[in-house]
Amino acid sequence: MTHELLTKLNLVNHPRIVTDFTGDETPEKDNIVLSYNPATGKPIAGIRLDSQEDYEVVTAKAAKAFKEFRKIPAPKRGELIRRIGNAYREVLEELGSLVALEMGKIKAEGIGEVQETIDITDFAVGLSRQMYGITMPSERPEHAMKEQWLPMGPVGIITAFNFPNAVWGWNAMLAAIAGDTCVWKPSLIAPLTAIATNDIAQRVASEMGYEDIFQLVIGTDAIVGESMIADRRYPLISATGSCDMGRHVGSVVAGRLGKSLLELGGNNAVIIEADANLDLALQSTVFGSVGTCGQRCTSTRRLIIHESIADSFCAKLVTAYESVRIGDPLDSNTLMGPLINEQSVAGYEHAVKTACEQGGTLLTGGTRVTNLEGDLATGHFVTPTIIRAPEGNNLPMALDETFAPILYVFTYKTLQEAFDMQNDVVQGLSSAIFAGSSNAAQRFLDPCGTGSDCGLAYVNLGTSGAEIGGAFGGEKDTGGGRESGSDAWKAYSRRQTCTIGFGETLELAQGIRFE
Image (tube, rainbow, N blue to C red; front, top):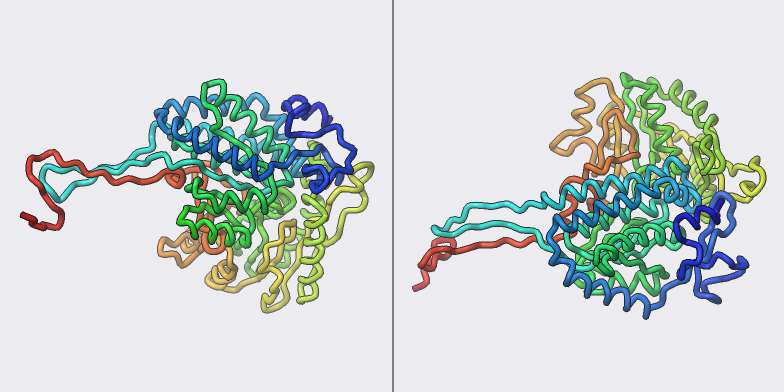
């Protein structure tokens, strides 16, 4: 099946990809990186790494292409993006299956990820005729003022393994609509999806006469990543990854006075009030914490539940967790696939062990899955895990974001106590409350900011599963960036304030006379 899938996506005999390899190749020896199937732990293919010289060629092409592409009217750019979206529609299932094969999320989520990119192309097409500036009154007679948004330049896009298609789509489609060219540095853990995704976009662009608009550079952080973030030819670096990575990227880019769009970690909490719809809360919490095997930045990490319903709700939660079907992510019956690699499994085991040593009670899970057969026996599967905090809610391990299906449970007496607990982490990405009371919901969304301190706040919805229409991003150590919908397109443009005088005499602002 793997060969058939790669064939359909034109990845067999691809100049970047080695499929007839022995499995003994290493980056040091052969200048390639291996893409592994996390469900089996076995390699899928080898990908040739780019050198410093390759990076320079790609960047020079992007800079040159930008000078011509920015001249294309925005609605014409919209036509390009419309055709790219249609091209993705033609391979929706195949590309979604590749996401599942290489990253490990279940096929339904893989297809959903590609659909997200298709959705953002639709959004971008609409934007191509709506990237409005504003007019404003001038204090001077016979003068007019307006604001406009202009193309910025080549945009460097750095993505993580967990969304190897959609996060690039959020950035690249909006950047292209704004008149920018894009250079993508994908995660070395999921490069096959990046190659297939980028090739489709650039093929369509080339057919329309736009060369070098979407480019890919696959290399190590030391060679490619460091070069990109320090390169003044990239006025904007959009980076998705860990908080530590974001701090480094942000500091280097700021050092050259460039702009960063950072989408970093999350330690997301769900608050459940006693009067909530508990069936709805249960379903949402399970998906939020177990979906993608807990490897979303928006995954539910913490459950903060009113003490009066904690015991009964936890019992239902344990039953639900123990019914989750774990296995091959390409099997339609599977609800949870593997972690991405052995390093993630080790991190999961360390977090469980540490939390229990700190007084947490393991309610379910906490182990590696050992009962799968065939090739899956060597995959990176773990059991979804619930750990209840000790009395007093002192569980330091829960303050760390572990990319794994671990849910920490805390209890509270008052709603303000719940808010304080939710906000008492360094990240500020996603948050949710389940409540029957409109007052509780409104306090959570208090426009004065006394409720959730996160960039995403949901009422009677879980923390995971954002729509493309809203701006996506978070506060604090999550980086402050905003991607996808709303006015996130402005991050890929430069603002210009324009003043036009149409009189015969010099008029200065603030009433200054200079004669």
